[in-house]
Image (tube, rainbow over all chains, first blue to last red; front, side, top):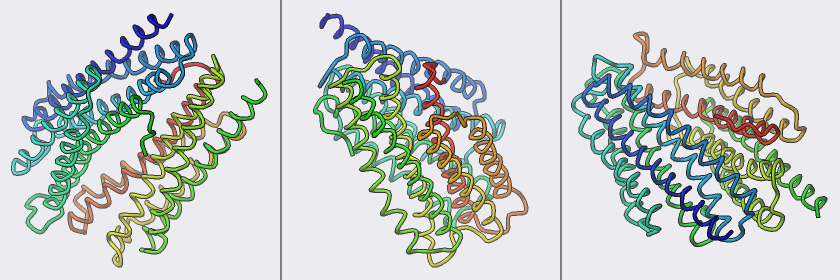
Amino acid sequence: MREGFQDDLHRLTTRLADMCDAAAVAVRDATSALIDADLVLAQQVIAADDDLDAQRAQCEEDAYALLALQAPVAGDLRRVLAVVYCAEKIERMGDLAAHIADTARFAHPAPAVPAGIAPTFERMGRLDAEIAERVATQIRTGTDGFHELRQADEAVDTLHADLLADITGRNWEHDQRAAVTAALTTRFYERFADQAVSVAKRLEFANTGDLPQ
Amino acid sequence: MREGFQDDLHRLTTRLADMCDAAAVAVRDATSALIDADLVLAQQVIAADDDLDAQRAQCEEDAYALLALQAPVAGDLRRVLAVVYCAEKIERMGDLAAHIADTARFAHPAPAVPAGIAPTFERMGRLDAEIAERVATQIRTGTDGFHELRQADEAVDTLHADLLADITGRNWEHDQRAAVTAALTTRFYERFADQAVSVAKRLEFANTGDLPQ
C-alpha cells in the first residue's frame, strides 16, 4: 500500500516536471516567434498550450484519486497538495507563453516589438526558460535550487523595470501602441518567472512543512 | 465526528466569503484612490492586503489540518480542496487591487489616469467589486450565480478591450507613459474578474464533481 502510494506520487511529480519542461519550451519558442515575427511558431506555441491545460487537469484528477484512496497525512499529504498547486501555476506559465505568442501573431507580419528592445525580450525569454528548467530539475531531483532561482527571478524583474522605464521615458521613438504592446509583453515575462518561483516555494514547503507566505 | 467536520468546513467557507468581501472593498477603494488621486486611501488598500494574505495562509493551514485529521472523501474532499484553491485566487484578487492602489500612490499628487478615461475605470472597479460580492454570496448561500457572474466578467472584458483600443488608437492625446499606465491598470481589473470567475468555477466543481477546464 505505502509502496503503491510512493509510486503514484512519483508518477505525479514526474508529470509535473514534464509540464515545467513544456513551459520552458513554450516561452523559448514564444520568444523566438516574437523576435523573428514567426507566425507558424507562434501558432504552434498557442496550440501546444491545450496540451499543458489537459496535463494540469490530469494531474489534479490523479492527485484527488490519491487523496481519496490513500488519505495520506503529514509530508505525503503536503506533497500531493503541492502537485495540485504547482500544476495550476505551471499551466499559468503556459498561458503566459501563449499570450506572448499571441502578441507575435497579432502583429504579424510586422514585428510586435521594436528592434531596439528585442534583445531585452530575448534575455527575459532565456531567463524564463532557464527558470522553468531549473524548477523541473528541482522537482525531479528533490534538490533545493531556490537561491539561484531567486537570483534569476530578480534578473527578470530588473529587466522588466528597466524596459518599462525605457518605454515610458523621453527617448522612446515609437508610438504609444508599440509602448503598450511592449509593456504588456514584458509583464507576461515577469509573471512567468513569478509563477515559477511560487512553484519552487511550494516544493520547498512540501519538503519542510513551513507554509510559504 | 461528521458533525465536527461539517462545522469546521462551514467555518472555512465563511472565512472564504469574508475574504471575497474584503477583496470587493479593496478593489472599490483602490478605484476611488485611482480616480480621486487619494493617497491615504491608496495606502490603506495596500496595508489591508497583508491581512488578506494572512487569512489565505490561515485558510490553507486549517484546510490541511482538516484533511489530515478527517481524511474526507468524495464531495467533502472536493470542498476542502476548493477552499485551498479559492483562498489563493482571492488573495490574488487582493494583490491586484493593491497594484491598482499602488498605481495611484506612485502617480500622486497627479492623477494616475487621464480624466477622459476615468469613467471606464470607475465602471470596471464597480463591476469587479460586484463580481467579488456575488462570489461571496455564492459561497455563503451555495446558490449558483455563475451565469450572471460570467456576464459581468464579459462586461469587464469588453471595457478592457475598448480601453486598450482607445489607448493605442490615433486619438490618444496623452504621452506613452499615460498609455502604459492605463494599459497595465486596465489589465489588473480584467485579471481581478478572471480570478473571481475561477473561484466561482471551482465552487461549482466542488458541488458537482466536474473538473473545470
